[in-house]
Image 1: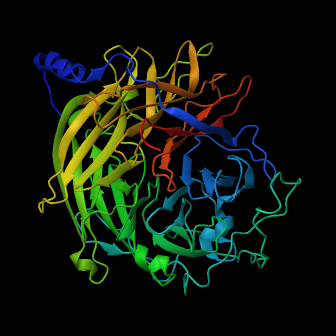
Image 2 (image 1 turned 180 degrees about the horizontal axis):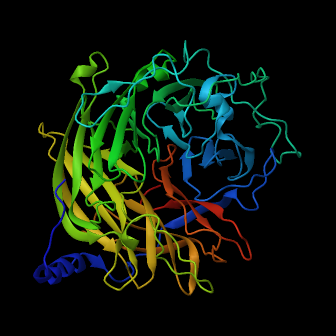
Image 3 (image 1 turned 30 degrees about the vertical axis):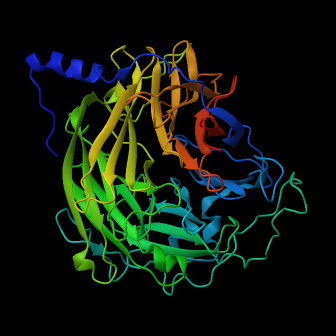
Length: 550
């Protein structure tokens, strides 16, 4: 990618170009309706399996099915009710908190015996299946045929299978004994199915082998399973996985470390995994790029048959001390499951956008002030955030992406883009349709996650803070008929923070949206806040509905 280079004389022009798309006031429309809200995993959480202490940053992930809500935070997961056909209320805890690797109990290997955190959950609306992706950050025992680390510029590599005979029989989610009587309706509560006890971990030589990526895919819409399980060997460190659902695969890009400008773009065979068959994973190394995000499908309408997945990244590079750019960069990822030599990753293609500067100069930096303390919070300003969403409505294909940028008023803003394709365009040319920076005052809005509903409404959840405000969570949006570049729905507060975080500068690594598969309108969102006098975060889960979408 070519970085944005400007001289002193060009600074004023860059500032003017950025200012021209900055929204400096609230929208004129009423805010999105908040139809449900409850606390998820975090401080004060209690479920059938007791409580859990969660580490920073929170790494919130959320998925919503027909009757359930599943949340993962670092190395723990929980399942909640969703009002509808099975349950009369939303937010009752059915399961959790439990280690996320419970889903791999009895599977063996690193997926069963190690629990690194950073697990992510998705609901595949096309197949009505739950997908749990869990990286392994510690090296396993060295194999006699240990794979070498792939390099940038090489063709796609096929990952080594982690467990012989995988996936094996589908297994129901293990339910540890309840530590207190769960508050659930006995008629609708899932029935526990006995599962064989996990085998003791065998003695191994000093671990100097590879890492791994673990996948669990349910056989139906019940988050209690059963699940097919897969492990694939990763010679490169599999940090910050961001799974995306696409008809031909589950795409999972990762970063290979905070001190290298190298990314690993992988995809697993969705069709074979849905059938519980042996499956393969293919990966491509991309050098010199920022954090990658594959587009994640919202809704039921599929892209044109055979359309490659699109992968996006912001420009610049924190390690190279390039903190801004005037482009978003796109790749087309075509996977061939019959002949991996025909798998291609084409790009990057630069999509010109208004100039931007990373909020806080990137990640792991002190930037967002809090009342009453010297500790400032990290903004993760160097990357496009999860999810980058894809929605097809008729022949129009939209992609929405967000990141955190400096604002003209001196705080932080949510930069957002809607890119479009036309399904009738065989060249699959990706164009910028609209862009904006949401910064209606001098406070900080950052670490956002977007979604698009069935009507084409765009909703964006994000963290909000800056003295005298404690960090909390808010939501804004727009209708498809509104003026381009504006979030016209006034900000809705999901939760106000009540205390400052003092133990660490890390404030989440990401928040998360999910579109409800029942109405294809309700946008769910999860993010963090601190309760009054708390020393650790709580998470807040909310459901928003935009005007005209019911």
